Image 1: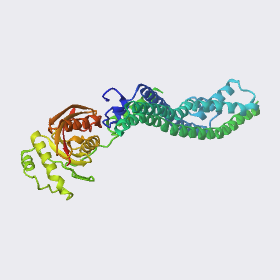
Image 2: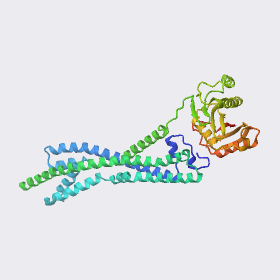
Image 3: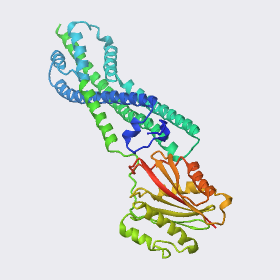
Image 4: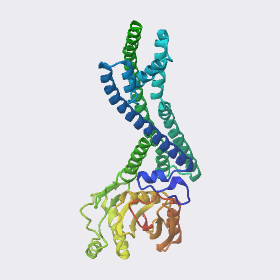
Length: 229
Length: 212
């Protein structure tokens, strides 16, 4: 460390840990915030990936059952056992409402379906705002720490009256560590955000094409009921 | 949610641990054991010689060559050399465990250094020190033409600050001695010692020779 406590005179051993632990208070706070942001955004990404994997398996299984010769009532019951599949959830909620008689007027079936799909998709997109915020904010946070560090480095340079590379080098290297952490938090968040958003878009297309099939199923049942009565 | 959080925390801990314990931001500097660098100044020749003059047979060898030069030397302006080399060797012999480092010329005269450490492979550092002192040395007019030489001892702390500046071998001319001490003092602070060098300080015997 510096011979009079000034950070610009410190001796670096060249290890990453030393750079991190030699930083000032503000840089330390920024580093901690960035690590927390990164931890949370990775949590969200892991959670989404696992949810999508489960949902994919369940949807495939449910669509198989849906194609089979089953009545809407049976399908509604079966759909309840696939809690993560969007198709199953859509079928389950609509089928239940029809069975319970809450949804009698099928003339606005389209509108009801649209709103259900919107609700389901917004559930899938939940927490994505955190990823995009992390992606946008953390480089700036890192930059803030770096600018601050370089500023104090220059100030001590002025105090010491020396501009040797030995003097300013470590200070600037130290200042740059926050930028590294900022980029380290932002890059995975950007990638994750785009990947997740893409999956959600694709699922939304699949869901609307499924909703057409579900609608024909519901209408078929209604006609057969009418014919019977 | 909790599972994902745990996975995320573990991933971060692993990445940070890898960065902390494996990644070196500065590559390890590998220096060869023997460096022969030859620098040429206008009036005289600078020679950096590194060897294990601490061992007895090296010392014996060092004592004998007054005029015959080591094979690594460049043939350049031989008239200045003998005096300089002798000074250097005598100094190292006196120190016993030290070693000779370099000889250089500058407008004010000649300088040479010997250091306390038995092994100090950072010739770049020593030439930086020598250059700095030489630049800051303005020998007094009073001693011109008389061929004075004196040895100033000083210690460099790890941060490059100077301590214990003392005249080890006086030239007999106090103005000359003072100019030499002043050169060392006004050169402080020096660059920090190389980090691979582990001692808390480095003792340097700096020889100032008045050119005539």
